[in-house]
Image 1: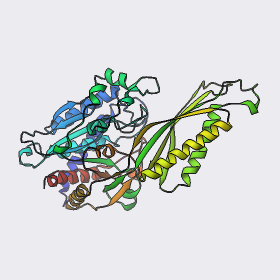
Image 2: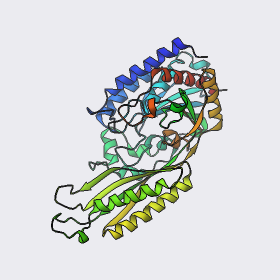
Image 3: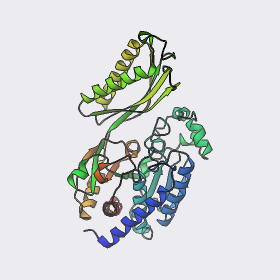
Image 4: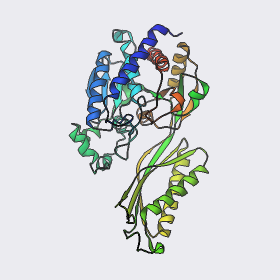
Length: 412
């Protein structure tokens, strides 16, 4: 059962740490900690202190992942723990970064016991997961799994800065990042703690849950080109307004997705130009994101979306180009690691609940390297990617206890 005095203290420590790292953000509502920015540099300094306090040696790899490793002179199998540092814009306090904080606190309980444990531990604080600054994601875990496509370094953010330049300005090496592949032979598995972004835990009134699987995801850049004209003199029948065409695409694809059970399709990061009053818009771009636990369904809907967009563009007198910027297959979490997490939760006195996540996670990409598992922690009212997202310290305390038990069990 849970030792309430010990774990409540760790839960409060986690909350203090998360409050401190919230200061490493842009001065706007909510948390904004984008990839390879000064705010990220501040976050790295704080996380480094967490790792050092846990007795871990720390280094930043070429893909921007901060790695904290326990001593391992005997070459024991390595258990990887972690999550991501980054946030969406004007977003969350706990999403991602809480998993790093809780992994460090669980590891800290073993800082004087590494020799007696049958496993070594590494805590990974990945640079990004959501792909907010650049239209891709999961750079750190893909690099470790040997699945990083070097062409992503040519992608640009909304200011026209390439990922390659942003990384180099941060002191990283994109070329070295493309060659970071770890040897799977020495790795026991990867486990990630994350807030739950669906409704299961909040509905059931449970502190933690275990992922059975993680949805697949595809992202497409839709680029519509029309013609600029005077808003008052071009006849309505002759308007080739890119934004009107884009609006029709968004409506048609969204309507189609609503008829497709088990699938989610959303649009974001919409931009237009010249974006001035009294002038029709010559260019509109948007990111279409498709999610499903069924990869076949997700791929089929991508093709359907392309056909819908092409037809609407032709009827609107515009042209459209569609580029897939990111794809990640759906993941089934490892059965053995799920059982160990379930046993760890039961030992901690927590209810054991398994469900599939409709949010993607670093564990999806890490599955190309090693067995993966995820422990979800309740988010109040299931809120995510918003400034009012919050997880109470009682629930983070339970999660720390579960992960402590999990580390002990993993070598058995």
